[in-house]
Image 1 (cartoon, rainbow, N blue to C red):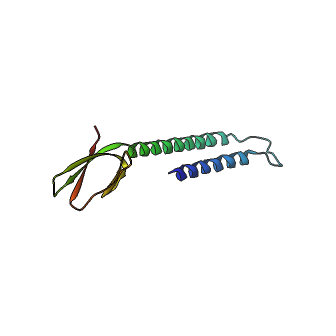
Image 2: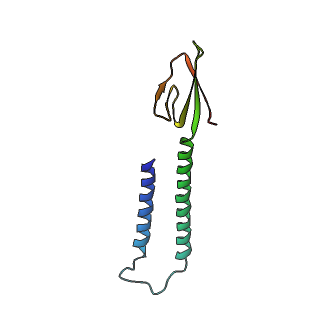
Image 3: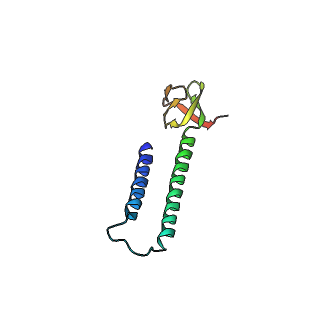
Amino acid sequence: MVTKILFTLAVVGVVIWLIRFRQRPGPVAPSHQSGGARPVRGIALAVLAVMVVSGLAVAYLRWNDAHQVVRVTVIDSGTGRVSRYAVYRDRLKERSFETVDGRQVRLADTERMEVTAAP
């Protein structure tokens, strides 16, 4: 996740560097300025800003969803014993999970798991 953000920032940095490099005056400067360069630059910067903001929004929403606490109820079919745990959503696997306080729980073949939203 962090590498995606760093890669995006690197691409943004390269684009900004290229824009500045292209705007440096060369040895022969034209006598008149073209009027069409300003709107294109503004549109490009607006699209870049929208991309960065939307990328940050998606990253935040994924992080927020992964850090929701859910209630996991483990029911042993043989004995009928019920155990309840609080688990972060991203720590939940098919047959195992890690609780909020750091305990690793692996289910036996005779146990089933029910996941509900935490109150």
